[in-house]
Image (cartoon, rainbow, N blue to C red; front, side):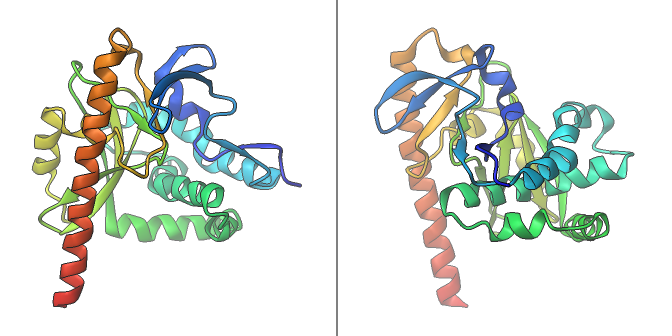
Length: 251
């Protein structure tokens, strides 16, 4: 049975952007206006997941990460419970699969993912663990992350020549699944300023961003900044695409 209202971006991820219970402020890039939206319907669509799939997301990912994301930096990234470590490793893949199912109507990955047994989930997490490690970026208190409607914050890695993708989960914290070999010092250096906060404003593929209450005192200035950040991020995205194209051509 397919459930009526399905979140492709879970409500618990928006907890730290609430301006009051059940409400968040967004900036719509198409309308060029700020609006208050209800978390019950934002980032949700009708009839895209079955109840069985929703139960799977809740059991294996959401229920665990609501607590684990907030405590893992204090544990020095060491997670004792196997299922909790597994949920962290599968987190980005789960979100991207759900996002694709909602926007491209391609549920192939979600169908595959939610059909996996405990053993299969452990095998998938083990494979990811050999290729990636978990990173939590914390930015300074004088800046706050936006939550982009297309979910991911990209960071281009000049050493490995690829992008790593992060998901904001508080106004100051972003979860990254980093390819092994990534320079942690580089990640720390770009987290010191406002670079990651600016990247979280999205690009031309971003329809809207969720805005932290920290910024709501001056919406006109924020509007100008968001449009500037988005244009800059689009330029970065185009440069990355060009780099990849030239690299493929050279190879």
